[in-house]
Image (cartoon, rainbow, N blue to C red; front, top):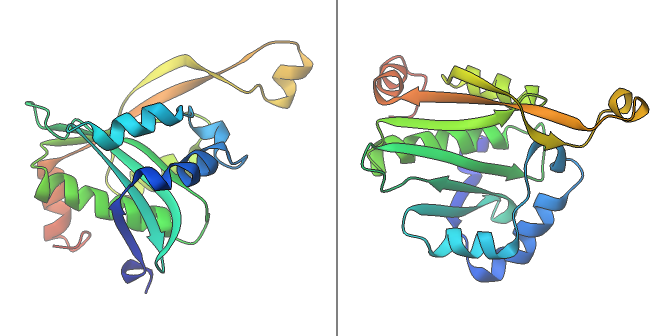
Length: 181
């Protein structure tokens, strides 16, 4: 069972070469806005953020960042989830671990994220995990142009879709057996 094979541990400065490397991977770049190493260092040190290494069978498989962990409105953001392995269920396990952490350890009322419009795979995962679309910021981020855009000589832009899960929705999912208690 994959659930017991995926763990989160705090990111250390010695992990940052790995973090930057997985962010630069061609399979991840279209779906994120990569950070500079110093931004990751800040997230590791900043008390309002949590930066974790995702491990699969005790080997680094990616990383996640939470922000707003001390937000007075109890609104915690899933800022980033970046994984190396795809299609193995690691992302789903991470999302479930992070939801549980946000609501049970960090006391979140709202756990939210934004996802690029082209990242339909992640959108489907978030919807299946109970997230609700709140809105769309149309063409608000630069993106590498698609082949038709490049052929037409225009730059690429992508939407950001804001999604969230509220504490009461999470609790209802726990009661329905959709979440680990």
